Image (tube, rainbow, N blue to C red; front, top):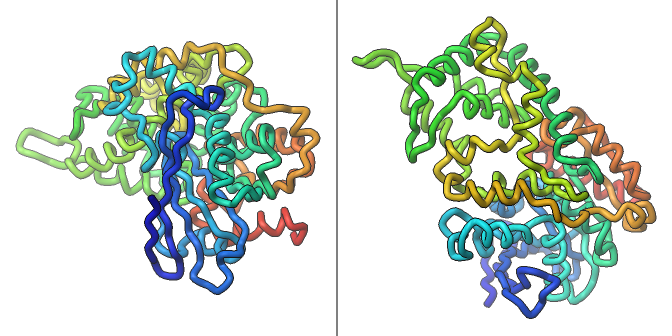
Length: 433
């Protein structure tokens, strides 16, 4: 059943598709995918080619737009757009602490979630493409993790693509998760230093909050336990265009005087919980390191292990001295499955995924070296979430892929500069730029 309706300048159609959980077992269990078609109201729109959008993550549903806002308006000048909720996200068959127990225990849950990486997502795209396009190839737009999926698409099913557009999402092709985080922690330190250079008053504020949290370890609304490490992970904001400002405003009025003394304000605690909780996207935490798994090695909580190689992030040592507190970024660690009530029931499942060694390879290097699909990628200079050096090395390995390296945007360039970013990538694959 499909449902169509209108917003300003567009016609939206909600569609649902059944696909195999395991594409190697097409007669086995099936799950549901949700996707939203967006077509402009201009004459001739039904003749436009298709663009499928793959959201960043893992674990996030496609953006819910209003009308032609952000990059969508630019896309609709040339395409009909399919906004796909990747398996387990958005309105597709959900995978959360509430639903995963339907699978059984942690072992069954981990086995189920092993089918939720880029390889399965691309096979989902190929399974539904004929129903959307009538069999014609389409253009893929991959943001962040969606770019990882687009890279796998080029590697596994290039015949399904007319072009690949990637923003902030060229993955390392053969690096281990350890390599990803060894490159990431220095970027986190640089982003923290840049934040303090912009807002020097935040040095003392962050230390004061961290000291209070270390002493009291407050429990926020909903049961989230705020630890110093959790407070440090607010640095995930620093990879976004407005993130430094958001962090500044978040911590500037953290304390309030009460009859029983000075405490963290309810407003601060609620705002922190909203940033830190994975209730809305638990797959991000559960699968975050698994998206790098290949080559017969476990990911084994790479971010947590590698962090120990960077003692400047040790909050206890920092608070014992006079150094600024370093914030961390996109680094999922084992303690999150203790502090966040949305993740606690998934702790054993996450442990099993972290120990898994039989992940299949995600990228076919010879096939990428022979690529014939027009492809272009925006690489954000010193991107906090995706290493620039890794991205450029990958770009060199993909025949014909053109890169636009820019410091104008942070990782969310597609969101904040959508028409410019997308327009440039379209022009690059067409040879117009």
